[in-house]
Length: 159
Image 1 (cartoon, helix red, strand yellow):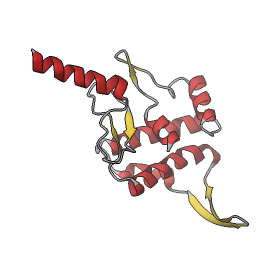
Image 2 (tube, helix red, strand yellow; image 1 turned 30 degrees about the vertical axis):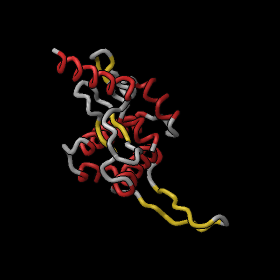
Image 3 (cartoon, one colour; image 1 turned 120 degrees about the horizontal axis):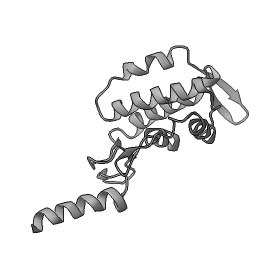
Image 4 (cartoon, helix red, strand yellow; image 1 turned 90 degrees about the horizontal axis):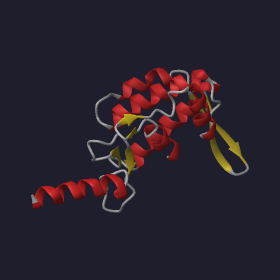
């Protein structure tokens, strides 16, 4: 799930300017390798496409059908080991990390429906996974976005 959030949040706004961790090939390769990928240019292209499709899905602006091309030749094959049943992912090497991210998104949607969402701050482009018991988290960071929203509301009330 951490890689899912890291990918969703790999294009933040910093001081009003978009920063793309996957935009520069060298930086993108480093990001992919840190997350278990091979860092190839083909993988970076798939990661960017996967990120864009998942961001649209989480914002409720897209359809899961956008993921179909990525998943066409993917299979999960059962392996019986001494430790029990394991599922092995069969996919081209450059697609493994993006497919794992899509599978993580599907697991979150199934196990924690409605808890993966965009930050409630209109000036923020980050996403959060609400793990709170009450399912009421609204901001990616209480210290940054939450504090700004509360300060803004306080200012408007006292004006």
